[in-house]
Image (cartoon, rainbow over all chains, first blue to last red; front, side, top):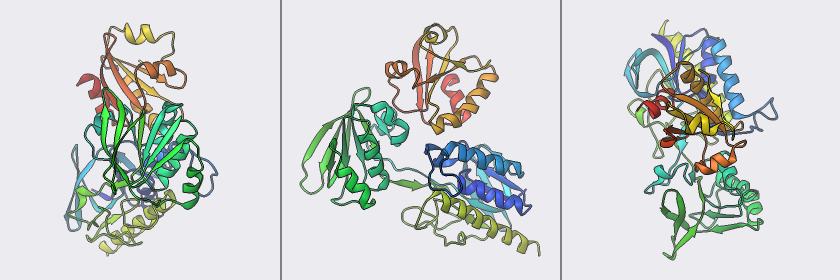
Length: 304
Length: 103
């Protein structure tokens, strides 16, 4: 039996483990893949205090070493359920189950898919969710970016520096992303913005060859031949397994305030999978600290 | 056995002419998920499974990346008798990596 089980080994989860260990509680971190979470995809972090530049991979490794050095235990298993038995919670994984007095859910989020036929098969064969990872493979080629947020705008701009031609497919006629990002993009000669449109079909043989784009207002269907499609339509929280112990909003985020409490006593939430205004590395680590502190408080009250 | 680093000179002998199945890891130094997967591949190599693991840096071997149509990394490709028989794109856990070869 652990004092605290943290589900998810990203920045929020590992920071929670650090705080919990410093409060001398026993901690198990359950991680489905490898520690780090989505930040490992970021080649250069420039907005986290202290370091002007650090790669997401190095950042993750250092936080992992820090948590481990303080005595946090790690198991690489995917948590699929939390059973609330009052003062004891059982976390069921794909390999077994573990018990703790308190649980912190820090599962983050994953890329939202287009939901089109063949999307899975074409991932890595023309369909990508990470422009900075895969952009290099599309030097002097034709690519499209789908989305209208900052990620889509930044991806399109990054790709404009590599690719011959970039299409930006956006379902509205204005951008959610920052104005400066949008203006910079409009100034790029090799970028065409396709407004009010959705990607409605992936056309492929062995790999992606073209996309079908449908204008929402006119119904007009256009085929764009290309080599690569970068999907940047946001992220989806990974909370579905925990709906029995935590209330989810309509987008799937766990409803909780700054104190990171869920509707179940002893179950807390930290990081990108919580309802919040800003999802950044620094707010994820802040959540980790808060959730762990609240969990420690809960444990200490329990033993009174 | 350690992971073998591939260049244009040894690809044919180490991969295409290998007597045992080959798990080829297409990666790059700047790719975070690739670096995350490396320790798992090192462990699998040390465990001396019935297959060989090779590392192919896509920046140093862009012609190989192109030939095998690698356009997202990390990309794991399994070769048997010189032919591609399986492939996986993106970071996956160790047991899934092993299952790509052993099924």
